[in-house]
Image (cartoon, rainbow, N blue to C red):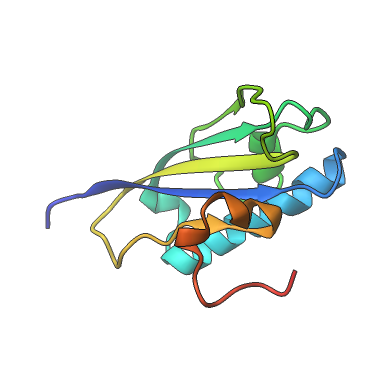
Length: 128
């Protein structure tokens, strides 16, 4: 079977700029991304995180690594450009998948970040 390459996107907001808030937000986003897309670490070629400049207390890639997932997945984290009026305290993710598609990718936008892509919201939502 031919291998397919595609990407899954997501975003979440942290309640405040603290290591525990960033850890919780990244965990929530990534657990939902893995669950809704039925993926494992073996399916992933790399993960790119970005975070807004107001999140300074924890690197999102480090927060993900602390979950115990992604031990063999290359991770990278960058800072978002500062844009006037942009949503605050946002962590975004781009996950590159290398496997035969099991289904259409489901993008995961949670908490206040759901406003970034209301067109991608799924009926099943978390009790936040």
